[in-house]
Image 1: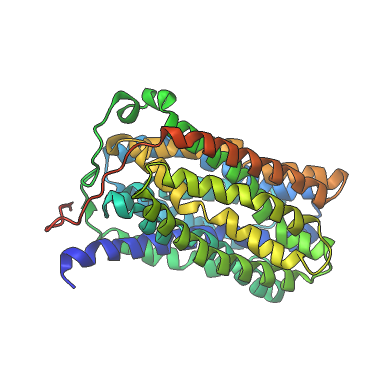
Image 2: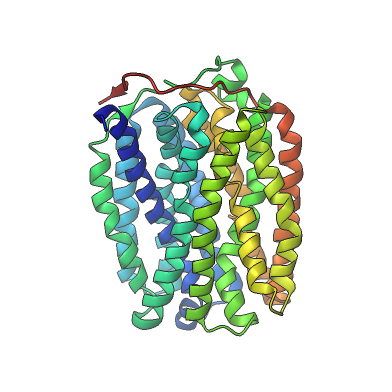
Length: 413
């Protein structure tokens, strides 16, 4: 394989590995929540607040990172962010109170915001528009697999060596990958884009008049509300409400998310690219349909106490994860290359502010007053809203031309 073809795949591999570590670190907390509660004697609402605080500062940092990435080296910002969040993760060794754990989560949120805001724009400039669904399917494969590994690593090491141990396992490799990122050439911004940059696509103020961006963002916000709440609370739900041990709950949910995610992320991106040949709204259609089909399955997964529960969790997870690649491709294609990092920063601010920044706390609050089952009702409502918004957004999808690989790769060192 020629160096010109090898480079984008190598860069995609390094970015995907960093994304994997990013989500391992997030889900380790979910796996060891009962252990933290036992040590610090905190309520469900307080344990949910850890994720809320992480996402609030993550969300507030994103609008700062986006404009920086649109002006300066994305490669350097991604590497520095990875060094920062990996270092703070290892500092978990010095956490001996609930308040210090809260501060630790705040700092990790700021570090991870740099990566999640910038890396999709880097990936988008590595491959043609017509392949973005599949490529983003590979990149975002790290979300479910990372969450799954976080549950497995957290469940195994946490129950054997204490809840701090899994954070050390997840923090170390980030330094190596951050160093590798420093040597990656940076692709030219927008080198594969075919649409002209209208005011709605090329300016920050134009985002408020860009219906393709707005509907994809709002649909993703409701999806994030549902996914975030379920991912944070499902191991605790299985342990507390369905009689599983904490280790078994984490292993069961971890294996389900891993299997669902590997298939759904790749299949969703492939379906989006396949249907893109027939309709410009393909990415919206795949996302809207998967969310809509997931609603009745979620009801079975969350409220059935019989043999249908585990298959229901597996199928619901698959449908909720199927939209990951196409919906992110819709966001990227809705704006021009030179404000793409800023647009993703705005998108992150909205989806987390309206989504998973508050759903874990809200579910925990309802659980303290009633039950986790009652708290999960909000995730079903959010899924229905996501599907409706995305079906409406189909009419605003921008046309995307089919492009081929250039004969030479143009990169900026």
